[in-house]
Length: 507
Image 1: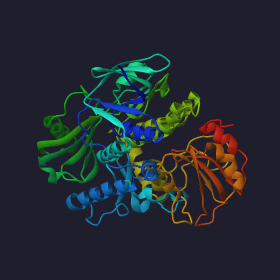
Image 2: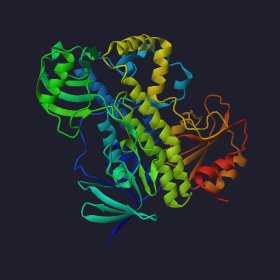
Image 3: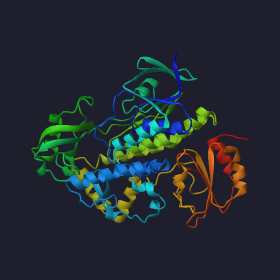
């Protein structure tokens, strides 16, 4: 007899696990399948942005993030090649980079309104991808997600009413399939998604190694006559960027000889690599599917979009996909809403992915070695050394400006919910742990509660006074933390329409 599930998720990386957790919060029976037998420990992203940290905070996972961050900071304090031993997230000398042009933390104006009411989650950003995956694996197990490792999804058929899948030696039936299986996604290829974009022109390496001669390498980001290299912050960790074309074989194992040749070529330093602990090869291949859904098959994370790792946006982009899709797909599975709600997944997330692709593409010309490109890099270096320039770029890469176009109305509609401090000692984000929508009533309105009563199973009403005065009277917050509707001064016009739009018609 075939096994049946509401949703099968292909891929147990951070995106697949985050999606599975969100689906389980929505009451969905979900199976995650992963071809690898163990989590991938290859060196990857070392930090997350504010929306990702806030998403974890809203699910009660801030302590887990802080534990991972504290461990990372301790490693830096004890082993960093060029950072102060007193380093904290507030004292990091650099807030990020654009094409390797560093943004000094001291140049960023953190009094800018974009950084207001972000909540405590915004402080937990120095968490590596492996740490994120470990947190989500524990979370998935606690929620009862079935994860099968060492089995591969090899084939599937969408017949319009569901999807039949070949998983290892078994046949599985699901209402929906979501491909979170990376940049070379089997799901994307077999489902026939269009995947347009630009071919790569660089070869990059990131590695953690043991080597001799490293004392001659300059710390941090360095531009040379042959490319760019990064040395540190941990001993043995480096990145190289060569701009003479893509690798001959992206899939070949990364060897010590290849890494040594690359680092020597770019830096001019005769290092000798004696051991490789972790290594990856990357390019600036940039592609994005035109639609994130094809029938009963959807994509999230790198399966839907690929780009260079510059700026560390890939993990954040995928987590954002998962958080956006999870509650919507769960609502469809439960029968609360029509399938058309899933159309908003593409309309909301595709523009974010397109921005990330453009953001990473824009950095390549600043890395090129010709005289015109170096002149452009000099101009950008001067600009990013100004307070306005550093603040503008950091607001973009930190994610604090991100919002969805959810239509006209109150200025907060489509924005991430401000983490308002409430008079009962809680913060708004602490009320989001169960994955339901929130109707925040700051004026103790019986009329408002009566309007929302039919949605009590999916929309929880929180009645409280704010600690600081607010012009707001009401917020309707989607499960992904974005404002679906808002009103000032006790006005309720539009609330019923918003409830029906996002959570189904209960009349």
